[in-house]
Length: 390
Image (tube, rainbow, N blue to C red; front, side):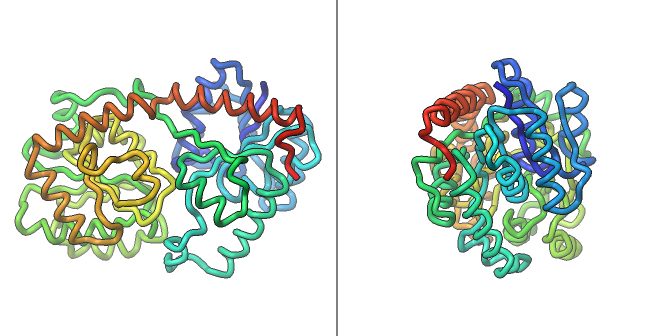
C-alpha cells in the first residue's frame, strides 16, 4: 500500500512529530510512504526524516493555486492508494489535488479549531476563521473519504463545526515511542539537571508548547507568581518555539517574581531530558485536540497538572493520574501545583498511574497498528463504493 502524506512542514508541531515518528514503523508494516511538504523548517524532524532515506518532496510553489497543481502532478506520479493530509492548508490543498483521482483521501483531525475558545484568541480574525471553516467544511464533506481524529472530543467538534457525518470519523489515539523517550531514573534526573544548571533540591515545573494564546502560558506565569515568594527553590522551564504570545510572555518574564529561575528555553529537541529533570509537568492550555506533550510526560512518569478540557478528560482521570483545574484560572492552577509539590508521595502515585495508562494506550506501536487497520478499512470501503467522497 502506498500512502502520500501531505503536510505543511516537518516542523516541531505535534502532528508533524507524530508523522515523523510513525514513518519507520509504517514502512515495517508494509506501507510505502511518500511525504509532500509545502515549507522547509530548520526546527523539527525534517533533517532526521530525510537522513533516514524516506522519500520527501518539497514544494517549489508559494501560493495555493500553484501548490494544488504541483501536488496534483505528484499524485499522478506516485499513484498513491491513500492521500493522508493534516492541518488546514495541507488538508485543503491535498483534497483539491486528489479530486477525481483513484486515491482515497484521509484527513487527520488534530485540534478543535473552530470552537468558542479559539474565537477568544485576540490574534484570530473572526472573518478569516469563518472563511477557513467554510472552505474546510466544504472540502471535508465533498472531497474526503474518511477522517482520523486523535480524540473523541476532536471528532465531536468536527461533526459540530464542519458538518461531517460521525460515521466517517474514526478515533485513533496518538502514540509515542517508549524507546526514544526512555525511562526516568535518579541518575538521569541528576544528569539532566546538571546540564541545565539546576540543583537536586530545586522544585522544577516544566511546560512544553509553542508560545501561543491556546497554550495558556500566561495563566501559568500568573500562577507561579503567587507561589514564588513562598517557594525560593521553585523553577519554571518553558520549552516551545516563539509565537503570537511571545512578546507578552517576555514582558511578564521581565519582572516576574521567579526572576532568573524562569527559563524560557525556546524550541528544544531534548524534551525527554527536560521531562527527566522536572518534578511536575504543567499543561495550562485553553483548548486542545489532545496534547502530545502530555503523553510524553506520562511516559516519563511525571506528575501532571493540566487544564480540565474535554480532550484531556479522555486520557487524564482527575485525582487518579493527574490534577485537573479550570482553564484560565491562575489561582486554581497555583493551588494544584503547590499540592503536588508538597506531597511527593501523591505525586509518585499519579506518575505511576500515568505511566501505566501510557503503556496501555499510547505506545507508538499501538497507534501504528490502528492506523494501518484504518487504511485497509478505508480502501475496502472505497473499492466497494462505501466511503466515496461526494
